[in-house]
Length: 117
Image (cartoon, rainbow, N blue to C red; front, side, top):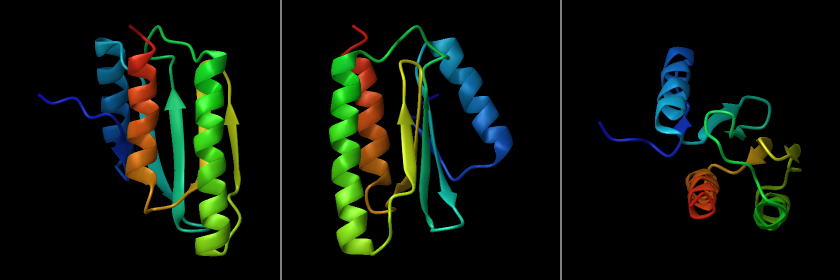
């Protein structure tokens, strides 16, 4: 069975299964779901499924990536990136464009893996 870096636009039971898989494999849980308000993505990063914590450097890298996305949606999609929050174990981002959601989720996953070794 192949492990998916993140799960997007799935049913609740699929998110639950993926969460348990992440726990069993000591991997971060990342999900992306369309926000019906603005039709872009709400992305969640949960590190409680694994023994990782975001370092200050990782948080700074994520902040830079989020600022790039904020600038993109503001200038190209004509809407305001809703909000985001980042701490050592949880992060969420409301307003990731559909054009960048795959790249963004893969970036989050790869960042946690690079720094978990």
